[in-house]
Image (cartoon, rainbow over all chains, first blue to last red; front, side, top):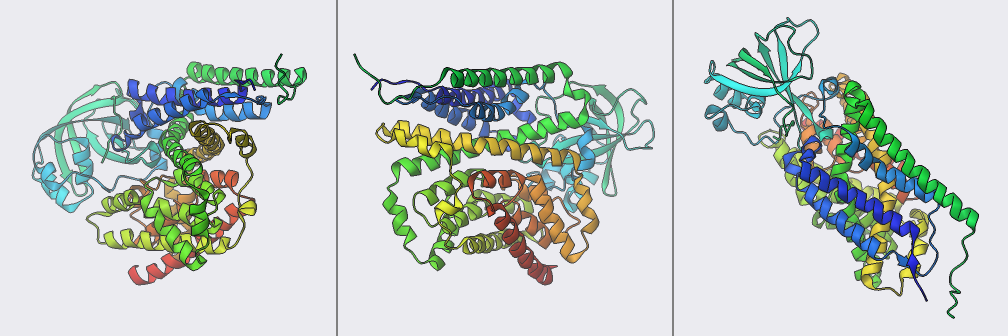
Length: 235
Length: 337
């Protein structure tokens, strides 16, 4: 009995191939970091490989003995499954913005791999500062470094009614994917008024001062920067 | 001359409508891509946030669904039905706890366990045991236990959370299995159009049958995953998490609020402990309610369950999971605060 290409199997294979293409695209362009934490990076090559295998298997077994037409209903179902591929690939590189701040919790240091010893020595990073705000030992270690120069990168956010030279330097901390993002913020003073808008990415250099449970940076230099390749912090 | 008697003719009208539908779908997708590219969602903050959260939920969940589909297809093609028939003869009081504990050996999150549980029930495992496995695996597997440990490391409530999550997760999964009871697989599983189609593969090589089952599972789960992720992303975009903070001090309402939040947020069980621990206004028992109920029923899973199981199953899971989790965490609230 002769076999012919089954339209519904070929279409399913092509949708799987589109998903595989998306995962390879995220891997090659590095755009996975807009959706996932470095901890869950492995999901991308795994997904790309599994989806490629699934697509190849489906297309290789797409010749059937019976007619297997693609019904309009199946076409729309496959369209729904393919829709996220289209959306993600068409969306310009973007990150969670300040809009989400009011809808998410603050970072509390859960699962953070930074210890008080890490904070006590070496160059201070945003995750060090964020982690210090969540533990007594961390704050003690940071207080010992009060007045030291630090350079942190983040995006600008402003509280309503805040002085014109104050911003909240903000980063999201992502454990697995952006859906679990929590926010970490550092108060920065002495910022040139009116120069930076909310959601602008900036690099702030200044002296760092722990005040109570808050950390303040007295900025000596604030410069605009492009959005970093890895915009989210991993704890 | 060979005559192809097996092929029923496809009418030109039907072929034409299929072609039109296919072209319309492709055209619609192309138009959406063009609009997203040209309109630049960066100018509309809520839309950009929605698309990023929607994308991140799917990028993380799809490989796990696929992994579950690979396991499911392997069970169908390579594991003899007799294995499950033998397990099915065990008394139910033994089957359910054994099924829950089997989840320890299946280190994927909740999206991956759904196709596996469906396949187990189809192959002859008691449906109640398959459901128990499906609900327990995302909580009891070692990756989730380790992530809960890491999230609460250094806190007084560390062992309350790690052991409490495992124990209560086990109890709730067995309770749902017990309520499902002797329901037959024909009554529990929703029939799938491709179940019949696969019959034609019976005399084909194993790899071809494996491919059919694998694709069938991914395509079937995929549509519900996309819908569930869209709803969850919309909720995360528009509903502030601080909304539940107002009831943090109220004994029972705080538990209900955290379960409702877990339902709406649809987080992966491998990361939810990090989010739960950020709700510092809430006590350990409310955080535990979040961690036990979330991996068993949320918006994303409700869509997957609705596509996989018969009408009424989602309601059963919601009622039993919420009720047993509430009772369990109320008891913990009394003991641990």
